Amino acid sequence: MRSVLVLGSTGSIGTQTLDVMRTRPGSFRVEGLAAGSSWELAVAQAREFSVRRLALSDPQAAERARRELGASVEVLSGPNALGELCERGDYDLAVHGVVGARGLEASQRVLERGKALALANKESLVVAGEALMELSRSRGGRILPVDSELCAIFQCLGREDLARVRRVLLTASGGPFRDTAPADLAGVTPAMALRHPTWSMGPRITIGSATLMNKALEILEVHHLFGLERARIEVVIHRQSIVHSMVEFVDGSVLGQMGPPDMRGPLHFCLHHPERVAAPMTGFDFQQFAKLTFEPVDPARFPALELGFRACELGGDSGAVLNASDEVAVEAFLAGRIGFCDIERVNRRVLERRPGLSGSIERLVEADQLARELAAEEIGALSRPLPPNSPLAPDRAAAHK
Image (cartoon, rainbow, N blue to C red; front, side, top):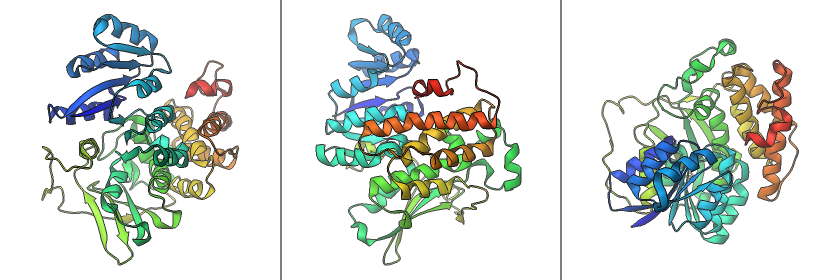
């Protein structure tokens, strides 16, 4: 029986992880759960799976959970609860679905213990990919990618020597504006940008799919996780979201991993790796697979994609800076502070102004905080002045993590 932590248990990845576990009762023991403030759902999950520990970052939510659960479950609380759970829990695998750069600490703690990390928190590799990969190698842990595109590449590569890889092709749905004229993008509203045609995801990832910034960040993930340079990474628009990514080898052979757009597929793969275990999920379907199309990316419609390649070339703190800026810019867009096209403008300008820090994870976290301040400055230049208590204000940058 495999012992598992589920980090971000009340979010999209966490709830789907538990759904997958329900299909194979007796195969997993849930050692612990971590969430933010959704204590009622977290308590229900803790009871259903008989967990030993529950971590809630919101102290008030944690207190409510303690009263509900009594002494049967240890409830950790506060901003350090997530990291403490990763340090203390007795587990084989941690499924990491926490969103944002705040999830980096959990990735670090899991890998420091030499545990397997099923990683859906893309920010971890984007911000500190080089450091985390070295930590994984030195401590004997392993990163299993949950993101459908990276999981597809992972499966297609298998044990192949990277010298035999000509290129990887990251597929992108193109989001809701893949047919919108570039001149019309200035009028895009948050409601329009949140209507993704094929996937159901959280707001930040959905907006990233609309700008293609999510794919820019995936370029950095591929670079770090698989050790591939910019020249061997390509992005292609695939509207159906059936082919999750492809690997082209030096002999011209192309392997692709296919399946319906359902995160339960990669989660099932990671939970059971290295085994292939039967699952009640759809495989080949004549209707869904009847027509598969591929198109090049239009740089006029998706200028944000180039920022990922640029950050890949620059190295150092570029990933941390680009990710932090995008988090702040997306929040400002959703709040009506800036326009849709301003997201890319803010990110490009902040990347140009990056502090140039590198080395330890601590230094990269510092770069993350500085980038948030720079993003707030750029947003302020595009919109009305920030109110003093805004989480985007420069003097509150550290609180916006």
